[in-house]
Length: 368
Ligand code: ADP
Image (cartoon, rainbow, N blue to C red):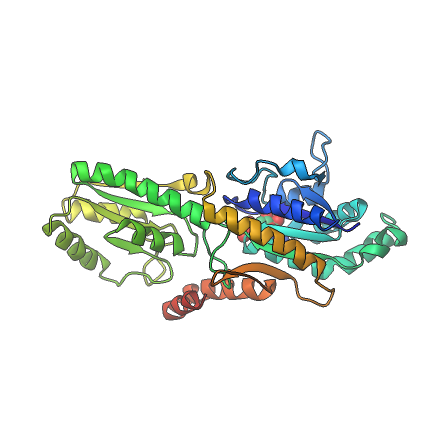
């Protein structure tokens, strides 16, 4: 029976558990055996933890009961330095072969997916080396000459190209909106200004959507930095709103926000301007890791479930020649795209920002 493993890697995101549940149950329904790799690539490289517990565990149907409504990732995630080195990937390959696993579904961000594709590319060479050094026999590797990799994008940032939504982004957005609503109440009571910093790394999706959904006065995005005279522009907007009787000011700053010379615009700098130049009672709220946690919203349960099921199907009908797929959502349809192309396109946005070509960064985001 085919053995399919699932792993969560990189930053945690609500909905990852639903994806793991769907992979395990779809694999079993298709007469395969399901395995979970605990603590991301760390589990794959180490095989057992310090206490001697297996980190690559067989999963039964009942093992994933109750996963759908739980935030974070119950099988753990980690950042793993060893997997970045060939020696670490060699150990990972050995652990997989010893368990008879040659298909891996990874739910993570672009880093995790890049690592996975590299692993697949190196796989035959890694196995040959393990046979040469006597760690594995020719018989061990014979049935597992090809590694199947399928990616699922789990990230609150919604930063991967070629998919409309990543698993976790809508739960995070929901939480951000609720947090902004909370500070809105206190802002309205005291006529205060709040500058709210949200996550997203290079990607302004969370900031933009939160700005839309909360009726923010101004939003700072990495892909579309504000004009050089942003203080004046923002000041005028805020004053106009106040003159119309608005008792609150809400400004959303993406954590990756910067000016057109790539100088970081910290939330505190915006707050300082609102206080010193406009005389507002201004406060900074950095939402931090609360944005990553919490119960997954409907959409992330739905996305994780459909994509997890599709990932198993992709394993079963991918040939050694097919490029590794990533499961995407495009215009409300679950589709497969070449994993490496999606990662490459994602990196193009970061490159466009680095080279201050903001028009290109915006049009790449628009095209997504
Ligand atoms: P994310 O998947 O959320 O983008 P990271 O970039 O931190 O998060 O990647 C998670 C893990 O994936 C890393 O700790 C590392 O083990 C593995 N990884 C990332 N990039 C590579 C790479 N280029 N080669 C091998 N492994 C990688």
